[in-house]
Length: 133
Image 1 (cartoon, rainbow, N blue to C red):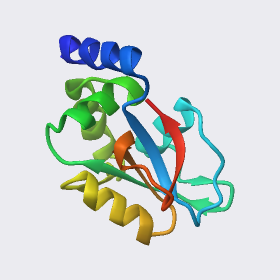
Image 2 (cartoon, rainbow, N blue to C red):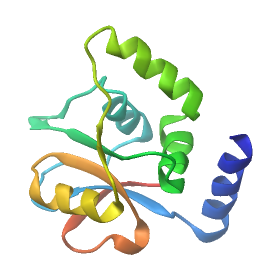
Image 3 (cartoon, rainbow, N blue to C red):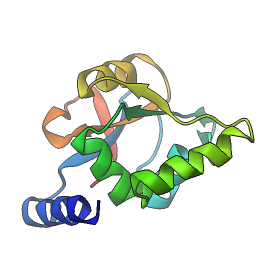
């Protein structure tokens, strides 16, 4: 797992940000810190100001999900799974999952407050970047 993390860290260092955390352009949310994003994805924070936030995640072992978990959340898969097991017993569910980046982008564009991560190449005028990694 550390090898994968180091690989993505090296790529982002060499080529700049590979992914962006985005919301709809219609949503009035300022850029966020990595700590705020981590809290949103760990279900410790549910809004920014008056805006309710709905975090989206890719399903399974997608390389961008692994990069997100390591770079932004700061947890490997095993540690994150253990975290969600503990949260389950407190009635807290993990973020909604989507099968692809395309479905995350469509969800973000159509559901107010939805936040997700996309490859930088998919970012266009329909979404607002909150953070890049």
